[in-house]
Structures are given as C-alpha cells and as structure tokens.
Length: 123
Image 1 (cartoon, helix red, strand yellow):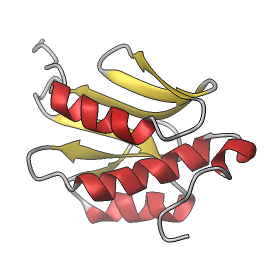
Image 2 (cartoon, rainbow, N blue to C red; image 1 turned 90 degrees about the horizontal axis):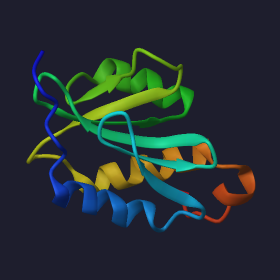
Image 3 (cartoon, rainbow, N blue to C red; image 1 turned 90 degrees about the vertical axis):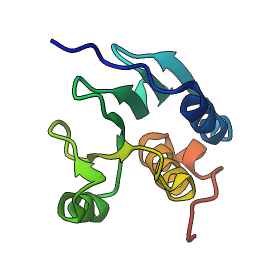
C-alpha cells in the first residue's frame, strides 16, 4: 500500500491563518494529516491520500452539498456524513475561495454563540 504524503507545510500554514481567526477553533494531528475542531466537531481535515493527491474535507449547508456533488473535480462530496464535502488541493487551488468555504464550515459546526462572532462571506 502506498504511503500517504505529508501536506506541504506552506499549505498547512495558510490554513492555520484562516482557522486562527475563529473563536475556540484549535488544530490537532489527525489519523493522517491535520484537522481543526471547535469543541468536538471537526471543521476541516487536510491530508495526503494513498493516490498521492491532497484533499481538504469540511462541512457545508445542504444546498451546497448538492452543488459540490455535481460540480466535479476538484470538488467532491464525502462518502461519510451528510454534510461532508471537499476539494482536491494543488498548485491551482483558489485559496480565497477555500477560506470562504472554511469560514462557512466553521459556522456550520460551531455553537451558534461562536458562529455569530464570525463574519460570513456574502453576509
């Protein structure tokens, strides 16, 4: 079985910069890669796959899950959990768009009192 590659450190640092802005959001090592959580809820998980591709999974509102399911690469719907979606990461990743999606994910997962402290894109 092929090894899973480590996520490039500069990508993890870019993600850290996004999550540092969210109240009570913390980083931890996951079974592979790195994840960010609020309470016991996972906001996002970035990891390298056995196929040598990098992915980040996060949560989305129901209507966005349907959109991710139909958009195709680099977007995908997770095969676990009804609101899990993700993006394949590479040198062409739109980090501004990803930051907006991660902000939404935080607001989906965080308690309402914390989510209300975050300015959501388009709000």
